[in-house]
Structure formats: C-alpha cells, structure tokens
Length: 352
Image (cartoon, rainbow, N blue to C red; front, side):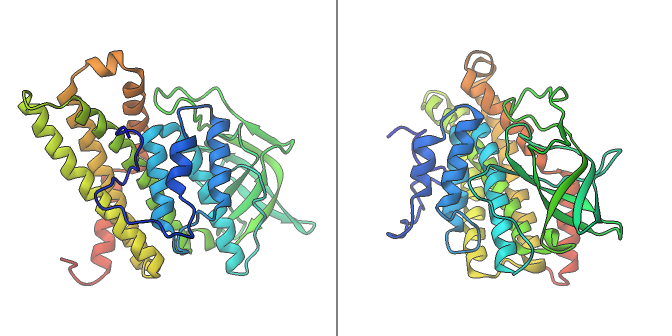
C-alpha cells in the first residue's frame, strides 16, 4: 500500500471501525480520485446514503472520509463536503420536528455567506416564501440540483431555505471565478429573482443548532487532509543525507499529529453530546485554528524543503498547493483568532 492510499488519519492511532458500520474511508479511497466534479458529487451522494452525519456515533468516520478525500484531491473534497453538510442540516431539522425538505437523490450545496450590494431577502406572500437578491460565494451552483440558502426576513432575522437551482429565475454567474486553486469549484455569485423557497428550520435556527459548529470542523478535516498529502510528498523526498529536509519532516510530523489529535478528540466530544451550545462553538474555533495553523506551516515547510521544482514540474503537487492555499482562506486568520479569544474570555475561567 502506497502512502497515497491509506487513511488520512494514519495507521498509528486509527481505531478499528465497528463491524456493522460502513467503511467510509474505503468508499472514498476507491472512488474519490482526481476526476470531474460530477464524479465527486456521485461519491458525495453515496456517502450520504450510508448515514454519514455528525453527532450520531460515526463523526470520526465522517471527518476521516473528508480528510481522506482531501488527501487524494482537495477539489473532490471541496465538492463532497457541502453536500454532506446540507444533508446533515436537513436531517437535523427533521429530528427537531422543524420545517425541512427531502434531500432525495439530488446534489446539494450550502450558500450561507452574507454581504454584497444586494443581499438575499426572504418575502412571504400568498402562503409561500420567495427569495430575491444576490448570494456571494456559491460553490458549484451551476452543477448542483438544489441548495440551502440563507436569507434575511423583513423582521431582520436570518432563516434558511431550500431552493431548486434549476428554477427559471435562478441566475448563476460563471465568469467571475479567476482562482488558480480549486479551479474546478467555481464559487461565484447567484442571483435569485423571486424564486420559490421552502423553509428549513425556524428563524435563527441555522446558526444556533449544534451542527453549525460541527460543520465547521468538517471543513477543517478537509484542510488537514490537504496538508497530509503535502506531508507525504515531503516524506517521499526525505533521506538521511538531507538533514534540513529531515528537520522539516520532523516539524511537519509534529504539526500533523497535533491536528489529527484535535480532530479525533473533537469527534469523540461531538458523539458524546458535549459539543453543544457555547462549548461546541468554542471547540470548533479551537480545532479550526489548530488545523489551519498546522496546514499553513506545512505549506511553508514543504515549500522550503522541496524548493521550486515540484511547484513548476509536478502538476499534482502544484495543484495541491494552490488548492490548499485557497481553501484555507475559509479560516479568517486573525479575525477568527480574535473571535476565539472573545469566547475564551466569555467562558469566565482560564481553560489552562
């Protein structure tokens, strides 16, 4: 077995899967190769059908599947993760006996960024909801069937809605995506012009539910998997006659092991029911910060150790670097650190 074939969580501390549980890792390793987006979305649907949801006893398997996909191809993971998040949101609303939609066999995204000149508003009339405005950062909108879209009601409260992306009044802008990383995942704006929408949850529920924090850790699992792939490239290039490369390899091992432990501990806490409310939000901020910092340093150290050759001559490696650099910007650096510091202070007791 080559280093690119095993689980991104590594063999050192991987716990055995339960005999009655589907092997999400094997599912991803076999199918999530560097392929077209539609192939990655097919994997996403298959994973969702196995019950790949956080907080129901298999959170570690779910995040491991995402990390393993990312260690093979970050573009594939970037397509898979939002679909699984959307399916989890719909199921969480159903379990809470709140308005929801049936995920069916459709492909889903989650469009919940805020801002822009014409933010999306939700209007209720004649017994139904419609959405109007432009939503920014809508990944794969032209390739998906449906999406969960956040919108602001006339009372100023935010609410989540399920929208058919094939509807006539949905306009997807595709010309604004100039990224050099994640080139197969265009994430441009989408215009909604009085588009029919089905409510999912109540006002404010989307942000307040425990799964909001869990979804953020799932994204961090993807970052981790991308960093693992770069770490493996460094490992394959290392030998005892290159002491500086060995130094970087040791540092990368330290970083990845710390990130792995943070993710595994978080998975245990989510399934134990302790990662809810303020505790869940604090946990997500800590884990995302830990993994993001590790991934950024892995990028730097692998670049220092290997030099320009793989960036210029190895297409797979160059893509991994560009993909991870862009994906990591979902972590807002110092702004997220400030938010973490505020949450630590709000807890009222030094945690260390």
